[in-house]
Image (cartoon, rainbow, N blue to C red; front, side, top):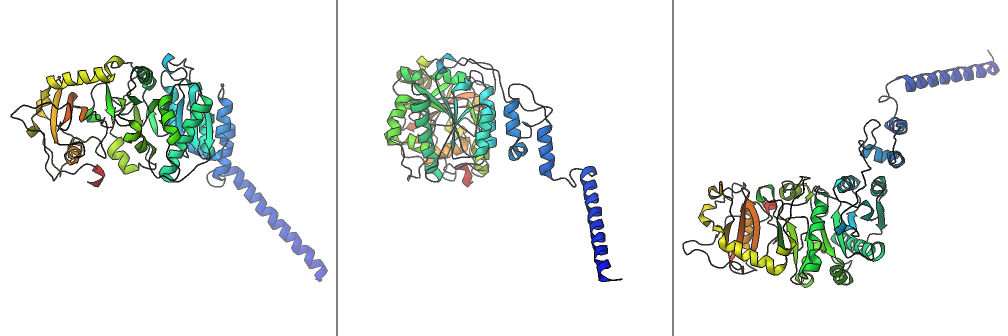
Length: 462
């Protein structure tokens, strides 16, 4: 056979082989299970475009779910048959919060932001038009979550690193919202993107907001009680005055921000913004209001200051009011400084004193406290603990460790008085003689002085 005849034959064979393989691959693509041959991307793309959503939010949902990453991340939102709701019945809001912006602080945590916004929009009394999501940086997924709920969103260029970056985000967000978007508002509510709010969060805020005009000694109001662990709460209506700034779902006035923003932390300062706000030079002896049972729940396990371990120790078992039934909160007149102190003195003087010897605490066995004295009790009790001065804190932190309440730093107390519940019985913890409310204790009793073997707070070390 000549060469001229051999070459066309070879080409014919190669073409036939190629055609055979092409037909085999085509058959497999069309007939074998999608998980075997079809790529995940192709399968999801088909599923995304096969849904026929209806309603006013259909276009927003389709845009959101058309993004492969978001589709994978939010399967319940993108379900064809039973998609999670993203539109909610318009609420007229509450008169006391009519022009109060709700600033949601966010970054690159789209799943957290979704949970936070979902709960905000489900809470009674929310005014959706007042919500502003501020994103620290340019993160498309977080923006998409805000757009999914048709919520106003602003983005800004990050400044600084770590704590400084967060503090600068607060400065920018607070300035933009109060000076540009809501330039006539007298108050602002701030919610972080790792918080779930209670059904009555806005009713609580509406109740306490007038306190700023009633009492110039108020610095902020918060929906969070640092000591409010599940075993240490007991009254959904009670509101307390505390020194410090709790954060975690809080509000303040324009007058306070007009003081703070001009001298805000510089971007070089590696200081947490909330620690700075608690600084005595900023607080100036003013107080905050908190509920006995928190109206926010911290669920974030990924953050600058909170990891999974800290979440488990300090937040996971925190009390959280989830009942949608309205309660009659403490009247604001009783929370004005002079009246509050008058009532506090009266309640302390009439409280049943707990013998310090009845409180057993074992450094080797950590458990929630139980006092047989409180079984069946309903009246207020008081436990005096030894503390000679405001700076002498070792015994205080040992007590907090024993009672399984906040023991990382001094929080949620009012001039040496902490209000908690044990076995659902109201108990005052009073520093003796450091607190100006300590008065005198019965002659036969001594203030609680815990053994040095007890850790000085910080359960993370134990």
